[in-house]
Image (tube, rainbow over the protein chains, first blue to last red):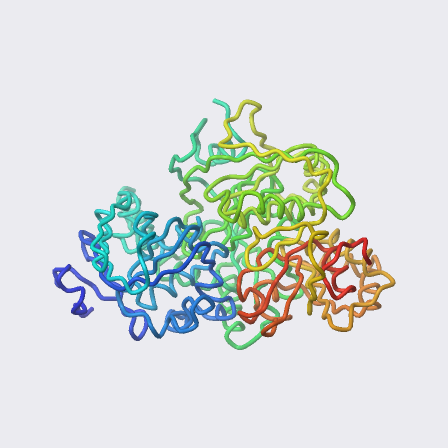
Length: 206
Length: 419
């Protein structure tokens, strides 16, 4: 796989450690190869409370699981132009209970494939929380950071430290860092890779 | 130590004698399921992980129910993935159109999910089986893939919230109304990450169909599971159907609950959830006459025989309002046949309602009853989010089957006694 990072993100990464996954035409999600640094920078897109999975990706598009198609309709019923406005690295910011409703994994897939680097919310619905990690979509809970944040703010996120910096407002917030158990899962590249590792380990032991 | 039924079931499946809320545990799964939206992704993950066989060919159900009978070429391709995978892995429980039903009505009916089980499903309404006293919860496709491979899953043990329903419910007030009221009280994230346990004399006398409707919507309060203690009513339902041994698990009298909510339901009226959240709940009697264009009676919440009987009781001798399309969707082939035998179809057809083969269809805005801009539906389904049944400028009001049927006749949302 070719190693590269977009200009805005390069300074956070040693390019030799970075994979760029191209899920959609413009979708760029960065994950550190060694999982040592997970940092993002982009614009904030703010939404309210109880953003449901039908808003994130309406069920009428679930006759496919193609990330490119799903990305085109990301957040469509909340903001019809969202997919065309968002840029790689941008961050969704929302209120309480983000991702409530259906168990569709198409929701984190659509967000990731639309190029968003992470979601920061007051809180997440249970199934979405799990699906996001399983799909390798970073998420952070930080009520304090969200309050003052507005669409268009320049946001920087350090996932390992749980630090959120709002450059536009010159504010810095401490969210709970991703716990070690989940970091291992993210570092493996999501649940499937994690399970594969476990199965390999079991095989080695036996 | 004293434990709730949720904690006990998890402990038994984790090989532990006790456990506490918030612990991370790995448990054995008794049964797993996926549908034509979620299973294709699970199968893709299963294959890409290099898995060669499933953990147990008897304990996985794949049910094409959402966009079936196939609504278009894309959905036909999805359903085909399930069909081929089931054949390749010789899964016992693949249910084709003509033999299928809406998954959460079908699996209990077939005795495939049982009291005391841990069940995971790649569908958020998997919590329906809590009504049997099973720890049943929805997960994403990747979690399903991992379970298909290893038969295990990790969970954080949820704290339990206890809900006590006292008094005597009036006619036309049932499980759907109790759960809508509950969500209205605690909000759509009021039980986020929690186990809900529904108890009290009202629940003890509630038929299984109403219990399923309650547990079904636990997810609409954000809950992981919605449990009801198994009893004689459960036993009567399960004993004829069970295909393997099962176990009744009850909470200890001194179990620790995170919170207890207690309500007297004697004065309750049928409830309606207004757009666009299931927590916007009002008694039907408090609503102005809200005109509707469609009524949907069906789904994993209220597509069971008791619901169809309720609808028939209201529709009998009446006609659906000229401005309304009334869609009635029995949730399984068995329910369809029973409804036909009882003469309910005769009543529905006389009332000029449409009767459909089982499908999730309109509930998720998939097919079979999509709303245009500006249209409004009353539905016995479980979600009324923006665009849930079609155009983003359409509206869904959630109710029980009798209210939906009465509203279909009146053309406006009304109490069943008004028809």
